[in-house]
Image (cartoon, rainbow over all chains, first blue to last red; front, side):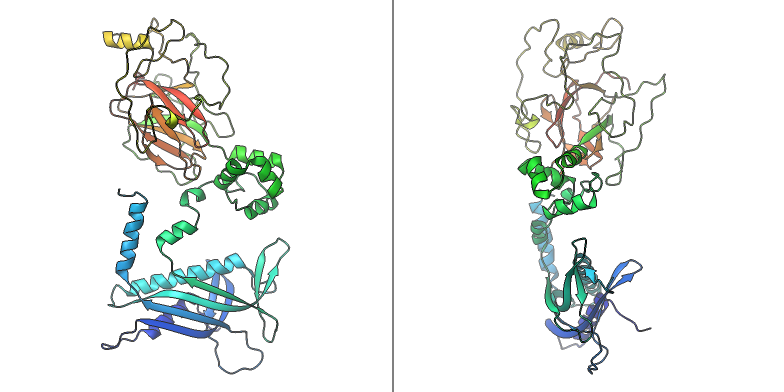
Amino acid sequence: MTWRPELSETLTAMVEGASPQHPSLVVEEVEIKAPMLVRLEHGAEGPRFVAHPPHSIWRSGFEPVAHSMTLRIAAADDEMETEEETDTGHRNGLWD
Amino acid sequence: MARGGGYPIEEFLESITAQLDRTQDALRLKAVNRPLTFALKDFTVDLQVFVEMDAAGKVRFRPAQPNETGASTVNLSFTTITRPMIEENTVSLEMTQAPTLSELGLEDGEKKELEKLGVRNAAQLRNLERQAGEDTLSRYSGVNLGRIRTALDLSRPRVSVIDTDDGAEEPQWPPGAMPPVQTSPAPHHPAPVDPAPVDPGPPVQTAPVPDPYPVDEPKPDTGPRIPGRPIFDRPILDRPGLDGIRNPVHPGPKAPDPIAPPTRTPLAPNGGLLADRIRREKGGPVGGGGAAAPRATPPQADGVIRLKPGSRRVNLKGHNLIDGPRKPRAALDGRPLPVLGATGASVSFGLPEDVTPGNLDIELPDGRQTRYWLDTDGEG
C-alpha cells in the first residue's frame, strides 16, 4: 500500500528541504509552486487531508488530476509575536 | 466521503486549517534547537473541482476525475493573521458557550433556516430577537413563531439554587455541566442558607425550597407578585450612585431614617428592618432570635439567603447564566458585588468583609431582577 502523507507532513518536508543546513547560507523566504494530489479521507481521528506531489511527471491520461499549490514561507520573527500578545492582553484588560 | 458525492466545503476547509496549524506547530518545535526557523506565510491551492449541492442544501466539492473536463477552479488562499485580527473576525468565546439550537429543541430544518440568519446558538438567537423581535425572526427564518418562542423561553437564564460559601474551595464544574446536587440537611442540623425560591421552570430543583415566611410568622403584605416581573423600574446599575460594576460609585453617608409606619417598615440604611437596627444597637436579638422576636424579613424581598459566619461568596447555580458578553450582576444594598467567576451553570459574587444584612439585588442577563434578603444572623 502506498504511503499517502497528509498535507502537514508534505509542507513540513518542503520547508525542511528549503532550509539548508549550511554555515554561510541563509534562506529568508521561499515560494514554492507545485502540483499536488489532494484527497480528503476518513481517518481514525476524523477526516485526513491527504496531499502530496504526483508520483510521476509522465502523463498517461488516467492519472488523478493534480491541483496547483503555492506555498510561501519566511524566517520566523519571534519578537513580533510577543509584542502582539502583549498588546492583546492590555486591550482585553487582563492586566490593566 | 470523496467517493461519488464529494465532501462538504466546511470539512474541507477545516481539514486544511488543521493541517496548516500542525505544520506551524512542527516548525515552531524545530526552533527550539535551531537558530533560524521558518513559518508559513501564505498557502494557496487551486482546486479543480465540481461544486455541487446535495439534497440537504450542503455545498460539496467533488474533485475532478481523470480526463474529466469542465471542472471549476476554486482558489483557496490561507495566510497568517494576528490575534487582534482573529478577535475582530470571529465570534467571541462567550458567545460559543451558549447552548446550541439542538439543545433548545429545534429540529434540523429549523436550525438550518436560523443558521442562514447567522444564528447558531442560544446567545445569538436572543441577540437577534432583542434587535429585531421574535416576529421578524420568525418571518425571515420561516420558523414557526411558537417554536421560536419556545426556544427563546428555554434559552432564558434560570437560577435554581443560591447558596453561599467561604470561598476556600473554588467550584470546578465543566462548562455546561450541572452543579453538584445539594442534599437536604439533617433535621437537627439547620441549613446555613435557605436556597431561595426562584424562577419556576424546567431546571431541576436541587434543594428543597422552604417557605421564606414560615407558617407561624405573619406574612408581610407584598401584594400580588408575578414571577419574573422586574422589581425595579430601572436596571440595578442605572440606579443612583452606581455607574457599573467596573467603576462603582459608592453612595455617600446616608441620612437618618424617617420614622417608619408599623406595617410596611422601610429598610434601615445598611439593610434590615428599622426595628432590627434599633435592637442591634441595643445589643438585643435581631430578627428570628426567638419566638417573641419574629425574623426580620423585608417586605419587598423574594426570598431569604442566610449567611453562615465567614461566608465570602454568593453562588448562583442554574442554566444559561451567561448570555454572550452579558453576565448576571448583583448589588448588596446598592453596592455592586464583584463577579469572581462565571460559567453558564454557575456565577459567584464576592461579598465584602464587613457584610451586614441587606437587600441583595440580582439582575440576570436578560434584565430580570430579583431581590433577596441577605440575612447574616443565620446559624452557622
